[in-house]
Amino acid sequence: MEAGIVGLPNVGKSTLFNALTSAGIASENYPFCTIEPNVGAVPVPDPRLETIQSFIKTQKVIPAILQLVDIAGIVRGASEGEGLGNQFLTHIRNVDAILHVVRCFDDPDIIHVEGSVDPIRDIETIDTELMLADLQSVEQQIHKAQKNARTGDKDAKRKVEILQECHDRLAAGTPVRGLVYDDPASAKILRELQLLTSKSVLYIANVEEDDLLGEGELVKRVRERAAAEQGEVVAVCARLEAELSELDEADRAEMLESVGLTEPALASLARAAYKLLGLQSYFTAGEKEVRAWTIPVGATAPQAAGVIHTDFEKGFIRCETYSVDDLVALHTEKAIREAGKMRVEGKAYVMRDGDVCHFLFN
Image 1 (cartoon, rainbow, N blue to C red):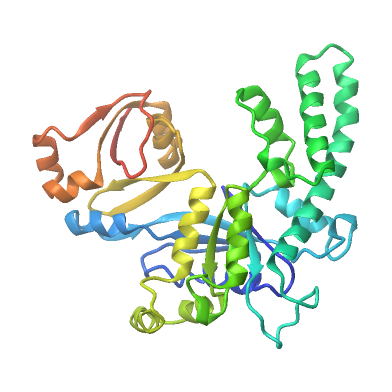
Image 2 (image 1 turned 120 degrees about the vertical axis):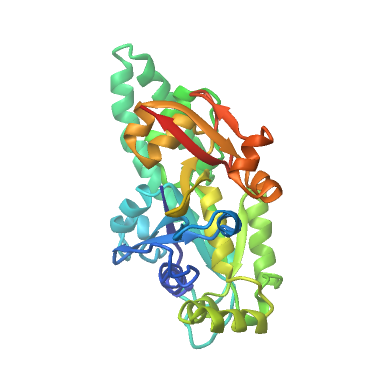
């Protein structure tokens, strides 16, 4: 699962990406790798890992990982080939959600491509380019779908209907992400269209150091916009986060305290992005490692086991699980078992966020 970072040029997008992927919010035990120049793996901070390790001593603590793609800056006219044009479209189509960086600071030394700072105008510029690109895609796909529908193919007929609904929304200047189908077949068709504006969006308000909590007027306007879309906003000072990412743990803690923060804003950003993608974590704990595993919300126990190894899913027998709260209350797995808190779950069990699991398999 990937999230793509988008935004106009000079909004702090690349600074933010570099700070996130520097692994500055991770401890030395966190695995980190840069996959390509514009793709990075980011640890998702989770205090439950430290809680588990305080009771089950292990050699390593391994967090969940979020994959980010730094997409080239989008400019007005990009859907018509301006700037990097189709290159950014391809990258956005391949991600599962969008992190939209919006400039909410004024700095005469950093020129804004539009000549002034206006976050709502900037959001609308990006949305317009994505909608225009989607409109082109829908118009291209609808002719082929109509041809297939004439043969009596029911799926093709439904696809034509969905494409027409998408076309009507886009032509009216409305993103596709507000279009939701309850029946799985229609939802699958919409998903397979890979429309840019169908993806969930998290707004990242890039603020100045004197507005770290995002209480300024520019951020308020972004929050109002996000609320109207049932979206969320995370305020981040990319410049400060870049500095924090280069410090060792002691200096980082001192700097955070000096600016009134308890953790880097990138930590809350990583968690918000993880949630946006519809992901959750479960844990395994043993002598070698305590580890968070990433699964979609709604995953069953066999599917969760398959994340560790495909053979675990194929040969799944049952799952023994308990909560982190059980561990805090009773201190050991032995005590959890004796207290009857160790649950035995079968193939139909739907995983809960924060389950601590042992899988039994053939």
